[in-house]
Amino acid sequence: MSLEQRRNLLIELLNDSEEDVRVAAATALERLESLQDLQQIIQELKSDKRGQRVKAIFAMEKVKSMDIFPHLIGLLKDPDADIRGAAIQVLGVKAHPKSLSSLVKHLKDRSPSVRVHTAEALGHFDDVRLAPYLVSLLAEEDEQLVASAARSLGSIGSPDSVEPLMKLTKDGRATVRVAAVEALSELPLKG
Image (cartoon, rainbow, N blue to C red):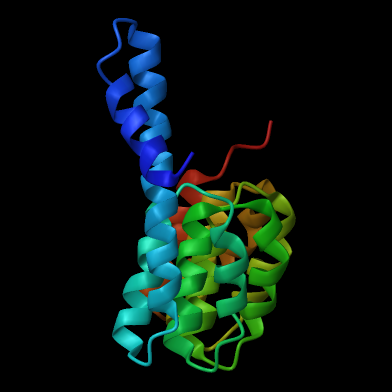
């Protein structure tokens, strides 16, 4: 059965008398269209135009398929920091555990913006093992990096982050202090 035939069958099933069948058909149709979109997105990733590539990366955020991860992880090796940063942002939103080790490496990326995006992306993962990596960033000079690391520590919710975040409330940079206070408000109380 061709892709078009499968699509037509699913459209027909949207009118089935049983609601469960209609819901299943709608879900299947959405997934099928998502996969069709992925093929087009992959072609756009090969463009010579940076803007088109970045747009394609962000379009992957809407694709519901595991097939996007090899492409996104491959983009982490791109020489263009904007491409790496966009891929990191989408990987963060997707928060798939298998992308975690690839992301953590970019906390040491040569580009400051990529490091900031990585710190932010790690906040989407519900994994307290990330806390030491993020705490180590709190001593950095880059204000945005420190603030992003603090916010991610709050999102992750590791109680071990309380003391380092409390120290940040005395930082000379207002942005950092605000991020520390907001992160502290998200952390669970120790019993």
